[in-house]
Image (cartoon, rainbow, N blue to C red):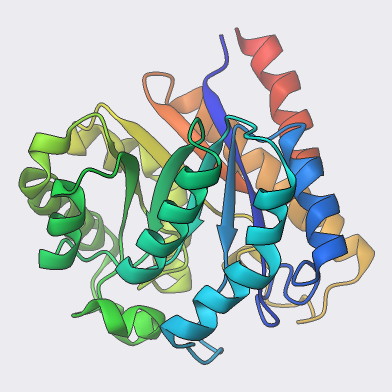
Length: 288
């Protein structure tokens, strides 16, 4: 039995560090989405880069990107009955895309991949509405939803042990508020958000300790694909083929560790490349 799901990522942005400007054109987007349909358990689509070096976009710009690139695809295809994740921190954008998708693809299941970390009134009102979706609760320490992209200004100057305790408290407080939606909530430690390089690496190495102390029984999303903190400091900003291959091997090794050392948990691995899936499938066959 497989111990994880694969979330394949596609961004319709000009500036995402992972695939910016590659799929914000109709032809390239269609080809990539068709490819994701062949292997991803969940397809995650975003229209705004969450990298702190990029400028945030307003709601109309974000929604227009969905209108121009994703909506034509939906109109041209029958309902594939898939799991579709909308990566945005804007409640209005999620509602806008959700309503369009469900009108045209009623059998498709929706996920709200919200990197804001905010369990606020707007989210609770959305959860109380008639819309049926899974919610991904991310660890982000910003004060308000509109500050989401400024997450690196909110890193805590804590030693590693205290940092893990603060993460535990973060999720416990929010999961308590969301307890009536149990079964619809997925948690995401959100590697790279509101964390120093050292804190990210410590969390990877002590993830079993963090997740066991949280006593959470739902699915756990893990996204370390193309994260800059995995790069050795000696690597260039623009990676060459050898450096990219090394980082992919590190990525597979880390995810393998998650599968082997956390057998009681259900993971959703957020990745950009199907090669990662192939490597993990081999591991899963061996360890089953």
